[in-house]
Length: 465
Ligand code: G6P
Figure (cartoon, protein in one colour):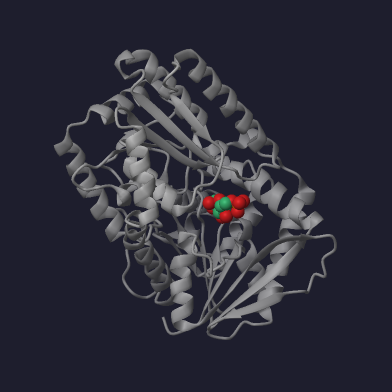
């Protein structure tokens, strides 16, 4: 890509941190190679906000632009509308979504601020890539300010079916603002189809032609399942810190089978359902009492939002009751850990585990599923139990696919994973590893930017592996 890339996301990545997330690693690579800009929220909440203030830090040939939010903006845009309205709606939890028009107004005005912050540095041939649900109307704001550049938007969360989307007050405004983009990308084909169906229902059949929407301009709609950087995660898994973690866990669990769950503590992740299924498994398969342990890592997240505080309480009581029912002096069935582990620790844990339970109720993609596969020893791999409601399930078909709402079938999948013969584990792992290597983070990044900058080239916009 010869043009300069401009990335905009709610959270501003810190490319200098060794623990920078996958997104930062992939986009950071492109930004560094051609020069570019990353605009985001600084993470600061200030008492009073001068709406035009933008800070800029330059690292090499990348400019990091950041804006602060004042308390009202943080509450209305981030906590209420993005995380209290859109997040549950997008994950099909309309029962806990909160709708209020004043937060919607603040969300709109913060999006406008992002647009204005960008205008001061934007060049004519920059290519703009907007990320995630915090910034859905941003492209429209940029067009309103006269921006003619190519603009792509990628949604990291799932997109629900039209009936769910229609619950949102002013949903036509929000979703049609994406027509200002040249490319709209989703994690899965299901999300892509949901968007196209929504457009057909609310904007007419003539608005959709195959994989493009023609309203204000020609908008390509594609699925671009995000991947991980397999090579670099495998290198982390071989690091001394990861190996030490793995050896320590193996020693501690030498006579036991270790299952793991690793999630942000979020109601979309299905953690209580998973814990209940594990309890039901111990109830049905007595021979695994004293020998199977589930370590559940739940990293703290958004804990000043009610629904998050509630799920934390629910989990504490659920784990306590299962440990009370089945625990012995020398064995506790569940170790629930409410903290964030670093990459080395996680990679070590993945290697020591026999089974990973990745069972969200809804998830855009779920990269834990991919990291677990990348970290396995191919000669003695562990088994992935994966929810059919994670975007990853469209690609990772050789996992044991479960419906996390169906306790009985999840119990049987846990059992099957624990007794699976070695040759079957190897075969499944080989196929899964090939998939995540082929569709890795660089493939995702290149594929999206290719579709954005060379729209005329032949490309399969309904990617399925
Ligand atoms: C999800 C979203 C991201 C978000 C992350 C952490 O993965 O798709 O956009 O940054 O959760 O949530 P937070 O609210 O802490 O940014």
